[in-house]
Length: 490
Image (tube, rainbow, N blue to C red; front, side, top):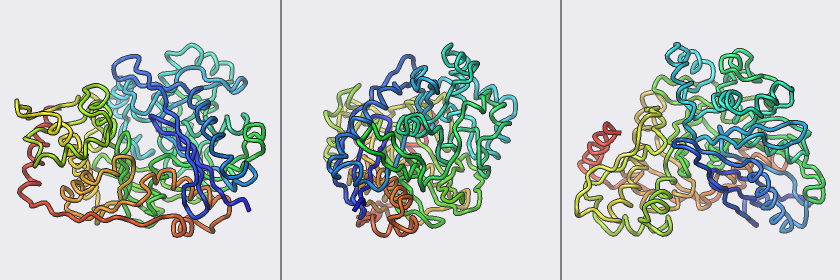
């Protein structure tokens, strides 16, 4: 019986293929790192050809564990959102490097549109703010600055897409140029309640509508893989941007339920049901699910630097050899010794949205060492989350608790610190890679293994560990005071 689910989890720093049984148990996994290109300050690029080659290699490594392609009921895709790939429809080859979601090069265009008074209209229509984070301005930059992209547009062979669209094109042998609704909602080019990309928004950003993919559901038969890739066709039955997938994987399927993913960045989503949400406190509105043409929505707060701060401490400063050392270092001292880190290494995301902000390490003294820096880095996760909690509450969507996941969530000290600083319970699943699990739930639903997402979540989600707050108010207030002071300096 073909009841395995294959998930392609396309992250920012690596790509993975993960094979799940229909009950959510991980059977096999293969992972490959992605090369990070930093051609200029604030620029971040990926090689789209490398993304495809390494994703394909990982998939081929795990499929034999299912007994071959015929034993896989469905394939799910989840991906780093907002990253833009440009390729030629005829050749199927990339025209330039992909511009990654972290990239800040389009701030001048965003500033130009803000100064022209367009942000309020854009936020009302798309749920997003004018920031380099989103895909539309990246597409415009490619058209203005890459001759091959401009030539393909003039020839009518240009294809733009986020990473899900690129993978779907390659997996289907070029038969499908599509994107799921969750990824489409991150481009600045689609109205939140509209079925397809909007001509007027495309005109505003100077992006040819003809180069964009068709917007489709997130579960169902979305395409079939080229049988030459895996020895037989596999139905592609689920697709979602990584944060929407994690929200599904955490079973936040009812209005008010909230999850936070701590990966390269940190992303918090609160389910808002079927009504299009509107934030007045610089949070984002986004598509959470679209199945059988019906959408649910979420309010989102996006933090650009989370796990990448620990990676920076490891790779650039040599503070730790492996990221896991930060927990032991944090526990080795009673506090950070007054050290506070504002991790604005790629600007500040929600609720501040300051592309010009830069990182700050405040409160250093001769007594400051590796332990203080490591602890301050972990404390910054709770500080950034606290800022978002205030914005969500001001928008009328206060959290009653928080479900956490992602690589950093495995750190018990950080999980407890979040509970302490937020003064609310924090829950963590036993399997913290809920992004992949959410894609598996979508694919299992789309393949007909479960009647709906609620049924898939009930069968596939594991046990939760709960962290209760124990911090006294005085300690919390002292830390927040230091955070606000350091934040002002950023």
